[in-house]
Length: 304
Image 1: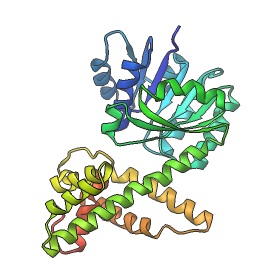
Image 2: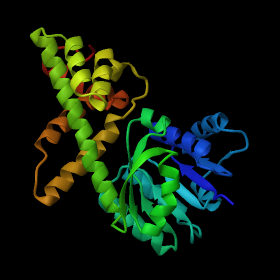
Image 3: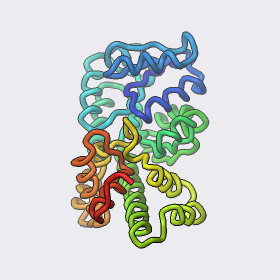
């Protein structure tokens, strides 16, 4: 008999992951919980009939499930959710944490959850929402090998395309890689933003620079370059990757660097531009809007 799986948290990534888990995860039932219940109801309506249930609380979702995936915005939300989950008997259950949080948060979660007789695997993922929708995410799995093996069938071929395996290592290792990896994405956007602004102000032209990026740096570079060119960074009602969440990641990375006796000078520039985006765009600010912040610095309008 297939296990019952619960999914908690329906941000841009969570919705796509949930859809693939329901469609390809060989589940009898997927229990869905989101703080804003309408999101859970809307998603359940898109899934196969009689294949999902919407829970009214964290406790209800956890009680009915064998495996619990969480994918939430920040450390505070994750801790509050796990606090609620651990108010009941969770012995024998497996918690799989997909959020981007500080490594110390992840290790502390593992201690609290295993102390209650449950299993824990850290499982942050790499990839934008489009990759989540397509089931092409890259999973980073850390924790006891026997627990990691239970998660793998839901990763490769279901929600993801590959795995970076930290079996039998501290769960925080997965979060450490995720935080450092996200800084690569942010610095890539910074490079593109500065290049596109220089191309405009020097007379080269943005379309010509984009052609170069597509030819030499296909993939994420070309994708973000296109978003910049099309003005998607300010036109969307809901950001694909909220600058508020991105700043949480930069702060984690800068603190990790400080604690390790090193610096991330380029990331400090990124964080300053994220702060500018927050001031200009508020909750609509997207990570790609670094371009808008660089435009403002250069005497151009935020919007292209």
